[in-house]
Amino acid sequence: MTGRKQEFNLQVFQIVDALLFAVAFWLAYVIRVKGQEWLPMGDIGAFADNQWIVFVAMPFGPILLEL
Image (tube, rainbow, N blue to C red):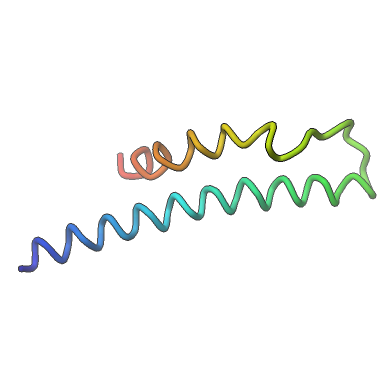
């Protein structure tokens, strides 16, 4: 029974890690967009242009963290 619970906890933490990656990317984008007011860094595309990075990081990020 303990093995099942440990496996379940591992899966839950992997999902949480993936969500944290997605939130971190979104938050970085928001900070960069808001930072344009104080420090112009050039044109920033829409978040949808960089959304593919989130879809790559969500499944592979937690796996890489486990190594």
